[in-house]
Length: 427
Image (tube, rainbow, N blue to C red; front, top):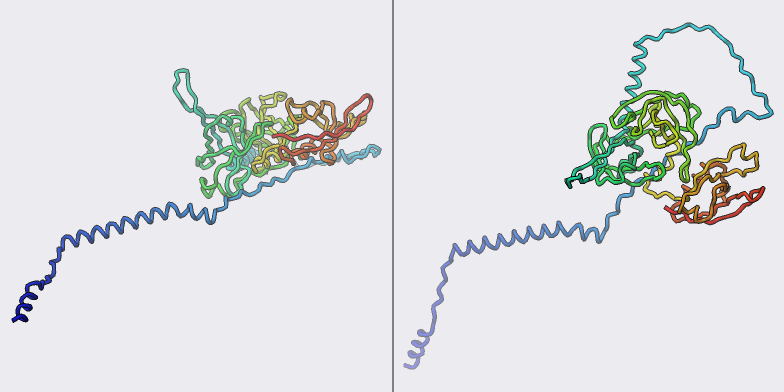
């Protein structure tokens, strides 16, 4: 009886477990939410990786900045004329002139036209080395309305350092420009920046990133070939003027070099200048080419001693050192001396051989060192100075803030006395 009671009690407390029915809608909704969260998480992870990967990559293995190639421009030496080899005691040989009848040839108008056609074809080839450089700046008129002003000049492609195409141009009109645009022969326009400038001449080098240019503009053939303006065959040489030789309009002129002007004396440097028979204006700019397609000079109308009605040019040979320095982004070492060579007549009167000081630039390193006009610089750091050009080369091989020891000779009474001064070159 007791056993039956226990059995009944057990039946009362025993529960029956039933399987809960599946809510398919709820399960589907949770599955969709979980999948969506996974997708969102994946997208966020990808975005985070893409953003932070370069940062951590540069921190762990920083990329090296591309280094531009060093630009090297060979310098030209003054050619010695045949007369320099004639000794004073030697009698100059007489030239016997023999007249010989030759068959006369006639030149037709067609031959004349063909000659100019060839010069025009050469000019088109040289034109590829030229660009138009435009300086854009913001101005305000009398009514407080802002507007853009543009200054335009010619540029010459002189080098490619692997990062930038380097262009020689008149930097004096670009100094106040907010933006610089360079237009190439194929009408492509690219941004440019001034790398370095030369206050002596006002010239500057403008760099244009190569990644903004087409393959055509990266062809080495469009880089200008710099000729030799110190050759004895410069006088009466036929030349072509390209760029803007008649002013602000793109133009083309042909003519010849009529004479070589006296040395253009500027601070720490002298420049050869030559004059042509081609018409010019005060605003003329551009490049002078010879008939081999080489650059002989940069049109330069700023020398007040020369007639601006004719095209004048700075000889390219004297600009090569400056072009190389600016192309490599180096500052110019500055002493502050305006001078010239000591002439043979002066040497015969007892003036020492060296760089003769005509003038000292005020507030310059030379002025602070006590150098005076009339001094003759005979050595730079022990290196013998024979001409002002040699002096220029010695100074330009230094950097700003370098110390140099100058050996100078100063007239004291009836004789020159030697002294040494230490000068810290400035920028």
